[in-house]
Image (cartoon, rainbow, N blue to C red; front, side, top):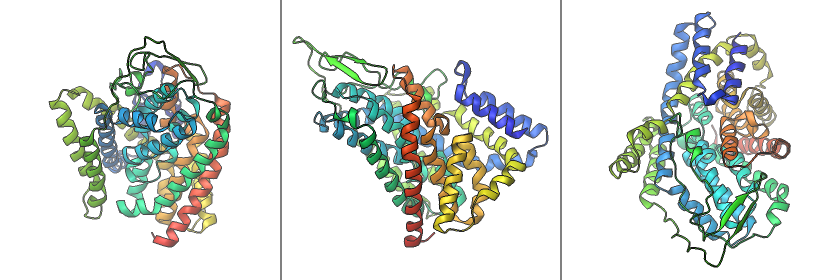
Length: 466
């Protein structure tokens, strides 16, 4: 029964009938798991206490990313990339890779999938380039580039808590796997989208107009909420050019001699960049000092949040919505449901599939199992199920699980909630994702990135030690 409930919750999360939040299905399922004795109330409470610090940290990082968007950080970065690409789709892809990797690593994969994707879509349109390679990059890198820091992904936060590593040692061990995954993704993207990237731009590069960000109807600005308004391609504010987008993500643009002058390029909000940098430094300092990194995140949120409130850039309701409280509740409830699965026979069989030890073949096996499971049941339940089985094997096995659950989801839509959000955002902007193309790209990137990153992890463990 726990497996049936888990699959039902995941199906609801994928389909989201009538736009209802995932917690609508997850909370009743968690109640049923406890009510039928599959998980004792004490064990459910212990699981909630274990996940709660991670979920609070997630909420704070989502708020920080949202405040960065409100201060115009993503808009300014999109404008800078458009200026530097010089009308070259290949250089634009390189710029998108650089920005998406940085945003994912520092502000989490949700920031890339939800807040950066509309900016990239608008930037490609104004540059006259085909949008497809660039928006596919935000989807892949929201997963692949999330290996570096504990704050980059909810799965990282869970693995970080189970590994016993400090913030800096976690980052040091995952730096090589992170670089390996990005390098493989970039090489495959240049080859896979060579026709799109070879097309001449239809117009010269244009400045990117303002990209408003506002919470959606469910108030979860940190997840799907920003998708409704962020980054909508507009005809105003772009040299008078009317930008149209075809279903495959290409764009056409045209303008007349009487077109209005482009607005000034948005400047980088230096105060915001400094606060984010100090917050990131706080993460690195807090962990060795025995202080929860959430305190550093709270400091960044308070500084940016109070400033934004004082300047009336945000409202208290927006701030609360940015924390995605319903999604956080979903994570807590899902943890209880997965606990019911872990206590049953399926988990015992899963444990037998995980190789022992930290040899290269063992780590490759662990990563492969994690990647497959992430595509079967989504990466969040996969990591919740695998961490208790892998953690006795030490940090090496925990990090191998992380590689599988972070890189594996690039194969299917359902592998990661971030990919589902990305797809909804493109749909709202009139861009349909082709299942065949998405899967073909995943078949080329996922096995290669998982293998390369796992080899890099094995090398890092030998060089640095766990």
